[in-house]
Amino acid sequence: MSQTETVHDRIEQARTELTPTQIAVGLALAASLGFVLMFLQDPMVHDAMHTFRHGAGITCH
Image (cartoon, rainbow, N blue to C red):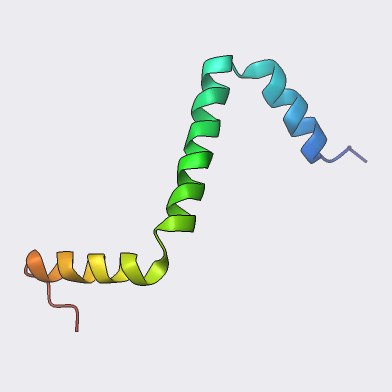
């Protein structure tokens, strides 16, 4: 039976294969997504997309 890959194995693989620049970009992406999810909450995003669809001439309801 073969060993299944664990989270620890993937972290070790990423540590050896990724460059510092790739790690920095990944962390920046994760931080920016966290910011968007925390401060740009669902009702505001929904209203903005709704207004955009109407502005583009798309009937959505």
